[in-house]
Image (cartoon, rainbow, N blue to C red; front, side, top):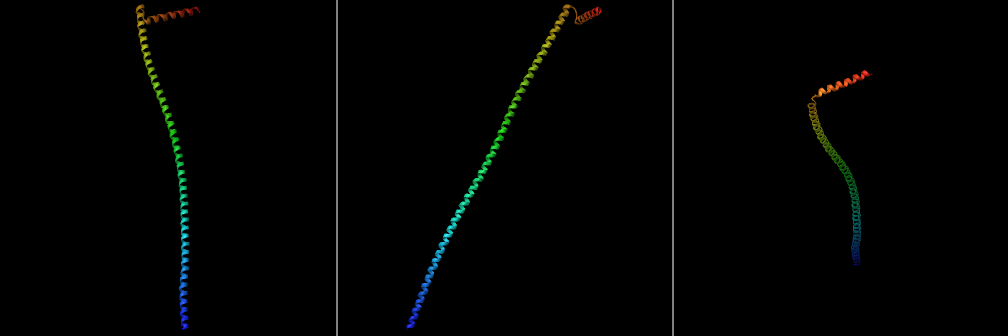
Length: 174
């Protein structure tokens, strides 16, 4: 019996050893699994932090690039607006110059029309005066002819004859 007892004890110890070994192994395995899970969780957390940092950095770079592009666009737009404003100012100055020239030409044209009208009126007045003078001269001529009894042709013939006689006498003296 002793051997049976010894075998039973040994079997009991072996079973207890197997159970204890199993439990220790299980405990060690669980500890390793827990440690691996913790390490995996740390790695995942670190990866998330790195991803978030990379995401924030990429977002910051994108915002910075967006700001630069916006600034460039605004600068180009401002420059174009300035150019357009300069062109508008030049056009306005040219338009104002043309308006002034047009006004000056209109004034000159009006002045010339007035002068032309004035000259036409003066010409008419002169023609009327000449007509009156001719009529008056004709009346005086007629009155003189009536008073003297000689016509103009007769007096001209007489004057011509008188002058011819003077020339003849002068020629005879020389």
